[in-house]
Amino acid sequence: MPQKIERCAWVGSDPLMVEYHDKEWGVPIHDDNELYEFLILEGAQAGLTWSTILTRREGYRKAFANFDIQKVALFSEEDFERLVQNPDIIRNRLKVKSAINNAQQAIIIQKEFGSFDQYIWQFVNYQPIDNQFKQLADIPASTELSTIMSKDLKKRGFNFVGPTICYAYMQTIGMVNDHLIDCFRYSEIVHLSTR
Image (tube, rainbow, N blue to C red; front, side, top):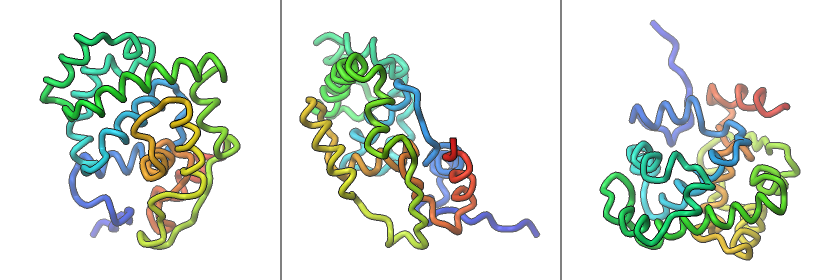
């Protein structure tokens, strides 16, 4: 009988969620366009489930030029109106507007810091935080660090970047390793994070 793989309790049985958990969640990301992608997807998730976003991910990639920051920053009013009619994404006008706005703000950061990666990873001193949580209840919705990041992003003109969204973002892009210690991915992520 095959051995049961231990995963974080939140994953469930949805194949998209399983694949996302097993291959992406918590892996340190340093590519600016990927960092932008997850910032937009985390913002889009506000009030919804992550599986809702994952089912629309391909739609988002097509709608937002593969999350190319330079291209999205140049989206016009016509592009915006087209996006809010697009059934393949979350058609919330504020969320769509924030995706375009956040690309524009990301470009300003790239000019100041050299890359969005340099800017965002400074909040953890360029080294992932290994939390070693034992159970789901131990994982916070937000932290002091995600609040600091949120305030700085808001000050720089970003939207949909509250402390809870920022913490989910930190988990996604590998700034924190919040895989539970009995999850098979926990030690793999620890290994990936020592760079």
